[in-house]
Image (cartoon, rainbow, N blue to C red; front, side):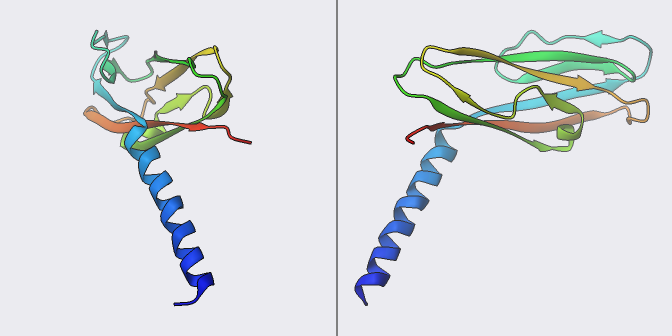
Length: 135
């Protein structure tokens, strides 16, 4: 195997390792909403381990928050990604931004149930990646 191939394999292995570590260390939150019949129905779940929007009727909405704090000495890139059938209903106020040392940011996850939504449970995930800003 030539030197160039070995170097490329090592670089590729390092990049793959960094990607795997970022995926494992990312904050993952389950997002759930139960669309119910009626008007102005809002049943709130107090659990903080997931972004549970509770029971909501059509033409209704609510907001849940996730607070990010930077206690480290370097800035961090933040990337917020949404997955699943609920992702079309949820809007995040900031998807990609930089969190500076000592800074605290409150991310708003706002859901709006359209009048055409089926009455059933919608689910999905949000993943928050924190990547150290080296450059």
